[in-house]
Image 1 (cartoon, protein in one colour):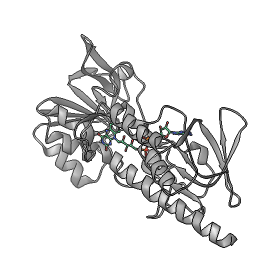
Image 2 (cartoon, helix red, strand yellow):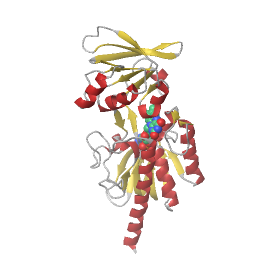
Image 3 (tube, helix red, strand yellow):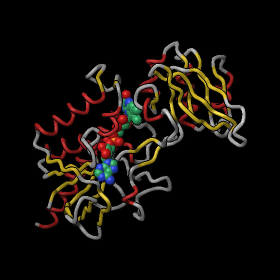
Image 4 (cartoon, helix red, strand yellow):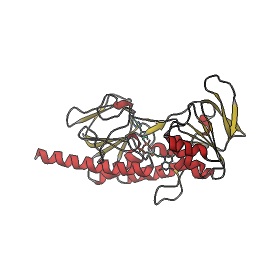
Length: 310
Ligand SMILES: Cc1cc2nc3c(=O)[nH]c(=O)nc-3n(C[C@H](O)[C@H](O)[C@H](O)COP(=O)(O)OP(=O)(O)OC[C@H]3O[C@@H](n4cnc5c(N)ncnc54)[C@H](O)[C@@H]3O)c2cc1C
């Protein structure tokens, strides 16, 4: 029986593990993949305080090394179910029939970007195709960028990108569907062109580099064209990795975990942290903050349980 099991070893989960061990809890950290989460796939991180410009993989390694210096136990498991009908939580995974028991669980399973699954996407993702303008926008200063999508993220991030890039082209399968003021502001900028009701067909490659985006009319498949660009940002939505929580009373309609400001869910002893939680800013720094708060709360919850016993 562990005091704390953390599902997901991204920035949120690793921070929770550090705080958990330092609060004298017995901690098990689980991930289906190598620790690091989405940071591993980020070319460069430039906005995490104290480390300057750093390769994502390097930052992830440093965070993981920190957990190991403190003796955090890691196991590779894909969690498929959490049962919680009493004080003891039971964690099931895909790999075998082992049932892991814990007094508290922090769910820090992050999100994954919705993708188009079209030719060229695998080749350029994480390099010239990004899902994060705050992170990768600066490298397109004075260059040509395409944003795919027309919702709030596409318009907000697009407005930021338009202030940096030489040209910004928006290709979307509807029109701009963000709030009218923001949408019209973006549309009014001199360096912005919007192609609504389009279907993206391919990321065009030339000599191993991204050269452009090919698309056509969404309904008829006609009017194929290619917009040349140096970078693409896809904003067609994110999917929280919380499928294994379906049927619980603490995920909202889009699958994000609902917590209070202490990262507590509606179930005592279960906490959420990081990108899988319903919130406004999904960044490494907010994920680590959530992880720290969740672990502190888990420690306080366990302390209260022990007091009850005596
Ligand atoms: C391309 C890109 C660039 C980015 N650049 C920056 C940047 O420069 N600066 C910045 O601050 N932020 C950046 N971000 C955002 C940042 O990566 C995230 O906010 C951060 O990684 C969230 O951390 P997390 O721990 O909540 O989730 P994640 O990093 O997503 O980690 C979740 C972990 O949970 C694991 N997991 C999921 N489901 C299960 C399961 N069922 N069982 C076991 N394990 C599971 C996953 O394998 C993963 O390791 C970027 C994001 C992307 C996509």
